Amino acid sequence: MFARLVGESFARNPRRKVLTAVALVIGMAVATATLTIALEVGDRLAREFRSLGANLLVTPESDTLPVEIGGVDYRPVDEGAYLNEVDLGKLKTIFWRHNILGFTPFLDVPASVSETGGATTLIGTWYQHQVRVPDGTEFETGASATHPWWKVQGRWFRDGAAECVVGLSVAEKYPAALGIGKTIHVAQEGASADIRPLVVTGIISTGDAEDNAVLVPLSVAQEISGHPGKFRQLFVSALTKPADALAERGERAQTDKNIQLTPTEYDRWFCSPYISSIGFQIRTVLPGTEVHAIRRVAETEGRILTRVGMLLWIVTLAALGAAALAVAATSATTVLERRSEIGVMKALGASNALVGGIFLAEQMLLAIVGGAIGFFVGAGLARFLGESVFGTPAAPRLILFPVVLALAAIVAMIGSLVPLRRAAHFRPAVILRGE
Image 1 (spheres, rainbow, N blue to C red):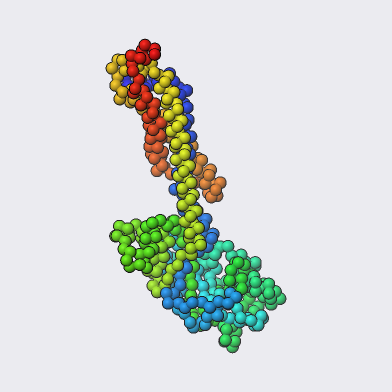
Image 2: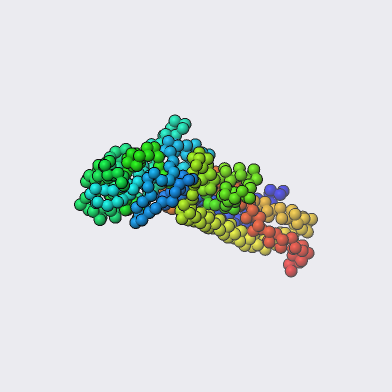
């Protein structure tokens, strides 16, 4: 009998049911799309942000302060501490090794260029270099991964070759001597007897100190400085998640012994890709180093990711709220139209629970149908938005299907509460008298 009453309700009032179902479909479609994007937006935006460059700087723990004047490092080569190039493969052995997208070592050498007759800085680095990982694999990295915005007119030097790229400012100052294809002669400052010829393969523009320097392969800078296999700075590009209270507490705990993390907090912090936890793991595999977050990049990423995530959740809640209001409006109209039917059922002994159960059963059926259709419509919408915003379509998340059905049921129930409460106060005698 219960199923028959519900079925006849659908047959007698199809228009109201269709309106309720459409409202649920639209609300669940928007919710599905925003939830799908929200699940992927962190990784997608984090990868997009890697075009901003490295977000971690690794330096020797006991290094001396650099002495730079006009972009030239005048610190003697023999001063300060160095790191070992052979240890860099260990970066791909940390817990979050797959989040390490690239790293680039740098070695600055005070030098003189015969063609200009002045002092400059040789910057030894990698552009594309194969690093041997302890597990036997190789990982390609270099400035192409950590400094993708650097622009080179011509081409980059080849790894290990007697070649260089010249900073834009230096090249413009000495166009005849430092043009592409020219051979320049460089030597370590104060060691003019050991002069090295280098072929200029390109002109580099970075908008930073590199515009006033000469970039060479790391191995060349090591030979000129007399520090084979060494470097002074390491830039790391890592995928991270926005910092929260736990991340900040974990970071402070590394320097303040008065702050202690519980074992549970430590596990959560260590097993989350916070910039502080990744930095801690880097210090573990590269002992004797300090790891600094490049705040300009890291904080910008965190703010944008947090705000985008918040915006998506607001849109989701707004869509669910709009669907609930639409369901409430159609349910209220349905209750008023079926006022006489409710009065007859109550006069025959039907309880408020039975009357409410009939209406809720109708709403649950509509919620299942509307939620299922809305999920597939939302998956298509998420695919379109992903391709439009990020260039690649967002893959449907089947794990969201039961979530969307549950949300549809909750929305349908919330939208029906007020009309059902009103129906519970209907008095059969008054209704049957036509009052």
